[in-house]
Image (cartoon, one colour):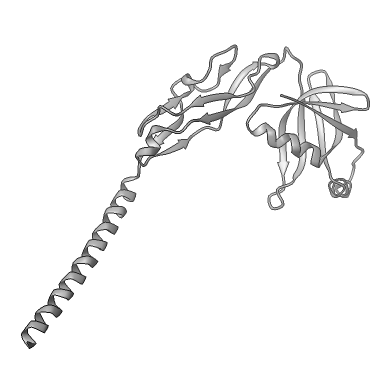
Length: 218
């Protein structure tokens, strides 16, 4: 997926300049890469966020327009405020279609695992996997069906679709597992049942004692 962003060059020297820029709803950023002189730019915070949220499930490239020039890029790094969670700075890597890149590809898990009907739960170990490929051959995302998975089953890198890309991890690295209840959880459930049973027995014994006393009085 390619998103188009409009940007403007920025001349920020002092820290206060960046503060004012962010207060105006802009994100300071840079474009760099092979054959490209580093360019300082500012982007609309609102416009970028609209596209960024969609990149969670699909790999995204950004075509950035600056003063009549277009730069085909990918988001390489980002700085986020630890409290306010807004973007403080973005780094975009300029790439060409023949550029070989290493990039994280989102993995979408679909279906309802059989194991969940038996009390288990789906434990996703990797929401994205790293691949090496040319920009023009980069997959948007991977999809894997967990419907046939029972408790104890797992799927690995080797179960993902094959193509012109190579995975950084080996085929036997697990990406999703269907877990059963932990032994401690089972013991706690059994203990709760035992407590309920004991409470019931105490009530029954109490009732029996009261009935016996009433009989003696008669």
